[in-house]
Amino acid sequence: MSIALANPLAALEGKVAATSLLTAAADTELYRHDVYSSGPAPLAVLRPASVEELAAGIGAATTAGIVVVPRGGGMSYTGGYLSPTPDFILVDMVGLDRIVELDEANMTVTVECGITWEALRRALHPRGLRVRTWGTLSGINASVGGGMSQNGVFWGASGGSVVDSALSFDVVLANGTVISTGSSFFRPYGPDLTGLFAADCGAFGVKARATLRLVREGAGLAYGSFAFDDHRAIFAAMSAVAREGLASESFGFDPFLQSQRMKRESLASDAKSLITMMKAQGSVLKGLKEGARVAFAGRSFLDDVPFSLHCITERRRQGEADADMAEITRLIEAAGGKAVENTIPKILRANPFPPVNSMVGPDGERWVPVHGFLPHSKLIEGWEAVQTLFARHAGEMQALGVEAGALLAAVSPQTCLIEPVFFWPDELNPLHRHAVEPGHLAKLKGFPANAESTALVARLRDGVIDTFEALGAVHLQIARAYPLETRHSPEGWAMLTALKQQVDPRGLMNPGSLGL
Image 1 (tube, rainbow, N blue to C red):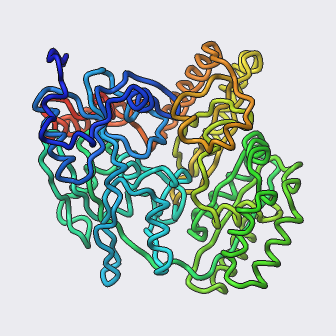
Image 2 (cartoon, rainbow, N blue to C red):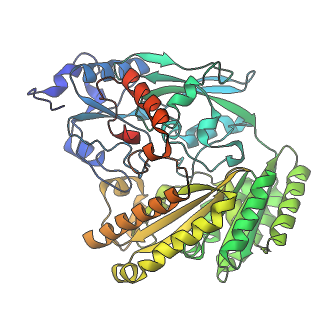
């Protein structure tokens, strides 16, 4: 719908505070970019100070025919908050970041959805609590609402993806109505209404509040890192660990991504990370010993390692965590892995939400992932198919400076993640310059605009998605990147389109997200 009014934002006057609408060119320019792509600039950015103002603003906008697009922490790279039309307002939830209720008796926490995973962790940790699945690596910026919309995995992956932590939502629909899903202490009560709004990529509404499951933090943590000569061995080991459910997190790197991380991650040379890791050990003596080991290992311990896998166990008692790690070590050695210094999981677990400097390459290259979840029986086939794709384009990639690595992660007894990651020479966009630490940004070489390399990355990314689709992979952060409709039967897709029609009859809530 085209907005013909001389002042389309007049519809919001009196409905939201003037200070809650950002219209400056610098703001609208920043908010038209995600980590990978760009779109039209919004008419304005709505930054509500309350759920009531959020609902009033959305209702007023859609009544005037203005599209509404929700944005979490801005860490998306699949076009989730990039509008297909310039006639839209973008909803930035950063002002809705309060903990509404922490209910230790019932082990739940209710939050406004603009709160970051890191802020929530800081509030819960002193009480010995955490959310069951407690965020993605970008959690210093990524919000709970963004996670509930896009879905995600990493911390607490043994408990599922982040949406598995949700019990209920308060959702603002396209007409400004606020609905509550499910129960604050049990999911589901009848058909799972909460689940319908989970992982919707903002297509069905804007999540205002979420009630999440809590668990006790484990007092015992154990760490293991392992080296493998080839992809078959690491996938055999990952699957063996995942099927037994022994690790709270289990993730690995291929040779290229491993070398990139070791170039850009400070590890032992980063005094701040090292001190935090030492404090996390629980005693002064243990902290000093572990700090000395990490400092001595430095960054050279993976120099000749093709593939690496890193595991963390979290249990109520240290002896239990150690026993689980001993069993993990047995399984991995049986699959052909060998133990190496466990620096990476120690540092990462002590600093779970680092600055998002890794959203650019070590010299300031552009960066974007693409991924697929496959059953254990298809992991090797999936990996080899992706490598065949890259081999077909090796000449182009070398000529245009496009490189690719991969993050691997065990997620459940049923599946693992393969996430190819591209690096290429191209200029950074305003979101990169906003999110990356200024001191880090200043050290980067940087690159000029490079349309040819960027176009190759787009073709390769599409090729990886097609490769995964042929194997029946599923995805998180679907947004505008992954083809959801083709994975549904016509009858199933008709149900989703009917739900979209019910909650957004005029098609003004993030149109195009999920392909709806």
